[in-house]
Amino acid sequence: MATTVTGADAPTRARNRRGEGARLRDEIVQAAVELLDEHGDESAITLRSVARRVGIAAPSIYRHFPDQPTIMLALVQQAFAELEQRLRAAGDDAGEDPRQRLFAVCHAYLDFAQQHPQRYRTMFGGVWMPALGESAVTAADMHLLGQESLRLLGDLLDACVAAGHATSTDVSADAVGLWLGLHGLAHQRASTVAFPWPADIADRLITTLAHLHD
Image 1 (tube, rainbow, N blue to C red):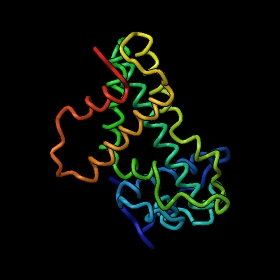
Image 2 (image 1 turned 120 degrees about the vertical axis):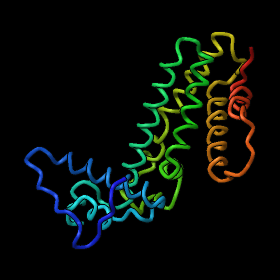
Image 3 (image 1 turned 180 degrees about the horizontal axis):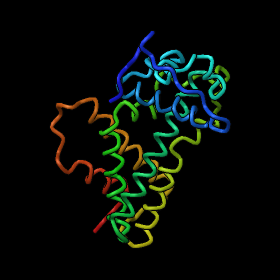
Image 4 (image 1 turned 30 degrees about the vertical axis):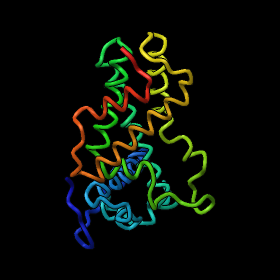
């Protein structure tokens, strides 16, 4: 875990060489991720706190991000990209059987939510999401979040139907239903940690919402 630095203790970042501007952008996003993981609260991510963590003056951020919500958007986009990568890796590791691939991907989704609770919560809402027109963040930016992960669930469910493992007659709608079930379980596990969850609750949920059968 990185150490929080404040005031005069903040490091001074070396100036980028020509053509290295993208490195500063990446460092800004990484600083936001670290602040979120450490504080568990997106309100800790401000232009000033991010600049302090990176070791730059706050106005330097404007070359890459026009406001705080666009930093948050980049953080969330990165988190969704990591989620998608982990889901695809889990599916690949599960072999060729589409049913096993679907279970592996769904469990990888739940694992990601459990391992990164602050990021997961921020990915699906929070005070960072601005009203349209109040930030450089657009409706199109928001619409694209999570689409690849949802498409992956749909493709796997479609493969289960084709292999005779599932009886879904509307794969697109059932993929959304499956995601909502996973999201709800992930949220409730984080919110009600003392609840005696059945050991196989995730498998029961996946089997039901994906219309799987033996």
